[in-house]
Image 1 (cartoon, protein in one colour):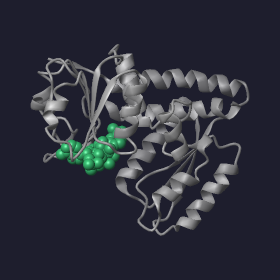
Image 2 (cartoon, protein in one colour; image 1 turned 135 degrees about the vertical axis):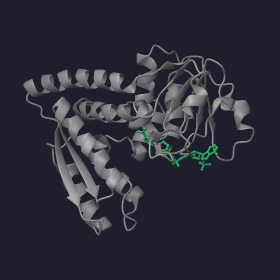
Image 3 (spheres, helix red, strand yellow; image 1 turned 180 degrees about the vertical axis):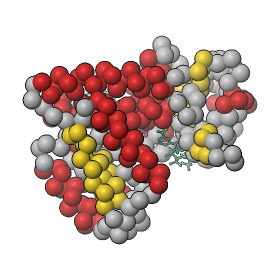
Image 4 (cartoon, rainbow, N blue to C red; image 1 turned 90 degrees about the vertical axis):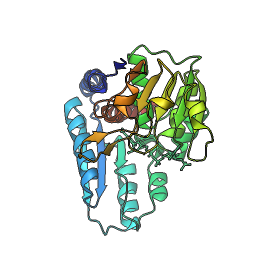
Length: 282
Ligand code: NAP
């Protein structure tokens, strides 16, 4: 039976480390503030935003909440972002996605000052990651690297397969595994003979967005399986992209849903807020 990687415990460990760093900054006179913008009242977004505010409170970061109505225009949101970009007391700006359809998400992401882009979605952050320069890294893949490192799972020289090529998970995940000297393959919806590829993986990351798609037939005996997906199954229970009951007996290690990758995303957002102080210092 696979080792179950405890994302809750590891995320708490990271948040406790950050809490000390934040306290040290405060003693030096620096108060870190994160602006959290939500447009509309999508219930899932409200839960995510609430969890982010709670994490801020826990580690001692001030969260400045902006709750805008559903009918907010792109111009109005751009104006707020411009104001927050110029506000020296704000270290990070987070715009909760998805946005209502009248607002172009790319325009919004590009309007955030790169030095306040704690989500790591700005093209400058993505470019820096791809050429190996310091900058903000998308929180979910950054959290997965921490899960592996803090579970003493080596990446260097390993066959790493990422299923999914989204800008926020799949692509940055592949770049980070490469940065850690893994040998990386990316699969997507047009990949042929996908199981032949995934069965080669020492580390398999599933970011497919399809409930329980990855069963034991995709997995090499002893592989480390990281499940990024978040879904509700027919019984309204949370589940991932991986069929845990099928894969756990075959894998060497596996992340559960909930309690695996999910808590790491918020921990790494907090990490990015703290890093914003260092980046500002240059
Ligand atoms: P996404 O934008 O929908 O991307 C899904 C990717 O999977 C695409 O690249 C797609 O390929 C590929 N794909 C779809 N069906 C496939 C198939 N049958 N075989 C192979 N590849 C297939 O999703 P995402 O934003 O990356 O998110 C993935 C999952 O992670 C979702 O369940 C999401 O809710 C979850 N998520 C969780 C967290 C967290 O904090 N835990 C954070 C972000 C996302 P094409 O490019 O060819 O379409």
